Length: 469
Image (cartoon, rainbow, N blue to C red):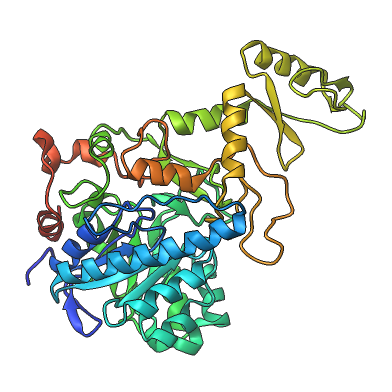
């Protein structure tokens, strides 16, 4: 096994693998074909266990239909679909890998029923899954679940502080199964990002000092330097990370590739999405806050995302009583209700209504957004159809435990993430759905590897990455 400067195989799950991890992209953006091939090429493939596809006897994808009347019943159905789908994906990936590399599964701790899904999948895939990567939230229970099923776990964090909290509270008790710590750069990674309130979304920080701080924290807790830190987010060419490899300050380093594997022969995303990736420019991926999870997330700034931006711009604060600057009664968009706004905002509201945004919808932050009747109808229908795919959903005000409500108003500035991700992954309009991508996606257009519309196999991609390019 030879490779770019000093990159050596690591021992993982009892065998030598390249320290190259395929990022697990939820809702069918990675599946058995892509992750099995990644493992077969000698790396660590990652099956997404977030609402994965199942297949019928003929090998066709089983549509996930929710015709139950209550959200709770639909949520139970969602968990059944999720377990069946992920088990099927793991089994197929394991076969494709053929004893090479390793297969991990990836779950979001903030997905609805995350613990039930993870336990259900591990129960039925014994001996096939080497490790579980898990982020989006604070997955304290990850270590004890890993221990019960004797698999490795790889927490995904975005700061040394977050890791320390998890370690102190839970992970120190199961230290032997923590195979690596994934540092996911909150400014560069695609999908949901772990920016904290202390960090500025508009001021990216250099990952090196943050990863060094993580290693310092790990050392202070007695964790060996041989436990790799996985750099995730913004990783394209290994040559860009030359001074990270074999660097005694950082200890063992591995690299996660989330965006590059999207454009491979085995990638399950539809052709239209693959084609769109070739035309992105720097800045076309937006770090935004519209996700119903409440987390920041990064996606292509397509018409779907732009319409959410525009919707939030048609927004004014209101008061239920006449007070202070709120001296004008809102006379458009809300029928027969007493809402008081500033005179300036009343002018804005009248302008929006004149443009066709005739319906005012209240948000949990005491503001009103103005939408057109078709948008209102879609928002309300999507909220009604909620199947509880998140542990807490800002869009539908669902919660997956206790009284099943967040206790807040459902938020019309957000969207149904399950609907849009299922739709785009299965061939829906790439302009009218959420299209996740990392911030380095513009490199598809610049990287000569992809010129003349070349689409590599996963094996060709891994071989290319190993040259430093």
